[in-house]
Length: 109
Image: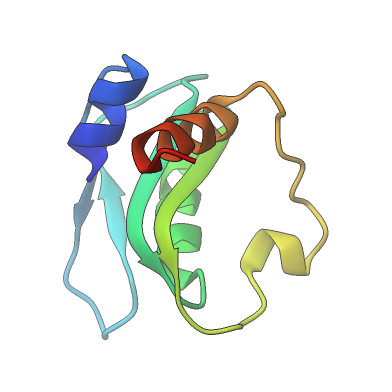
């Protein structure tokens, strides 16, 4: 999924995280330092947001700049992390808006 989104958006594709063994919780380690880099985190299905939240936290600790999460599908009606604490401020010209435009064009809507 990330490969197709990157190709369609003309963005570089990089694996920035590795999953680490743990107690069943989503845990990641950064593959490299990414100071100030704007990141588009792509996930297939978002349920509670725990996976995206954990991944974004690890990216932020690695020095990432703005992080946008794009998902193909949303399952359930759980409250989401950043929205829940009122810190979500989408950039109307950022990668998320370009992904939405790409998705509409791909669906023909």
